[in-house]
Image (tube, rainbow, N blue to C red):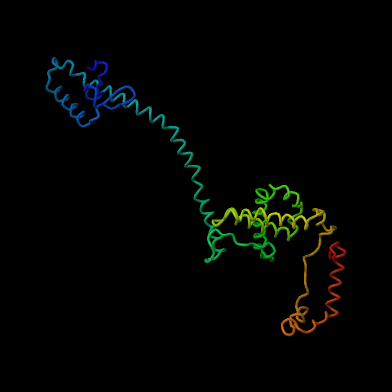
Amino acid sequence: MSSSKDLKECVLCGRRGVQGFGAADARSWRCSNSTACQRRIEEAAQERLHTPPAAQGAAGAVPEAALAGLAREVEALRTRVEAMSPLSQRVQTLHDEVAPLPAQVSKLAKVVKSLADQAGPDEQVGKTAPLSWLDLADGPDDDGAGAAQDVLTELSAWLVRVFLRYPDGVAALSECWWWHPDVVEELVCLERAWVAAYVDTDATVGRAADWHDHYRPGAVKRIRQATQNCSLEAHQASGERHRPGPQIPAGMALAPIAAWWGRDRASVAPEPEADLIAETRVAESARRRAGGARR
């Protein structure tokens, strides 16, 4: 048989027993059947109303026990609320951190849409499109300069993150690499190949291996050859690399070759005209004076 110490007592209605109780808090119990518990409380209250004051005696203990139980529940709830206060502060902090995200997501969505528009409706979403530094738009307005700035900024970040992690890449990339359009073209192509191999939705291990085994070593070799013994001083006004961009004869100078090739290429090619020869020699002399003679 259970001793009086084993009996549980409901803090609300005062019922005592072994089974049918749940924990009210860490130190007290209450009836698991709340409906029956409430009924017993009401019956005890009715009994007090019809019991003379002299005969109430122990019956007054039931409401006192219920009041004590309620007090303990209120104290437990207060403790829980205080424990949740740091959590509320953390929720507010998270809210403040998340607040800027919609604007960032909107900006990212515009970038993704722009890339998707460049890819075209027939291209797979996420597939990197080729980009040519040599073929970027140019002109007196700022559109060309802005596009070139974007390419160089993105490329510079990728060089630090990926390309310059390879010792031969560090050795090959000269201090004046961005003055060499052919080198920038090599690097832009290499970066795009890396994105296609590692980032695109259709990226594969085979592409990554090909980038390591074929694309990167080939680009490093060509960059080293293009910039060997070059420096920033070489691009100053007195340097050997300070010269205008390449030019070819324009207009009527191309017409004789076009006519020969398009009409009668089986015959002998037309002779170069004297004016063309003289213009070419002048340009050659200017290149020699600038240290840029043909190699």
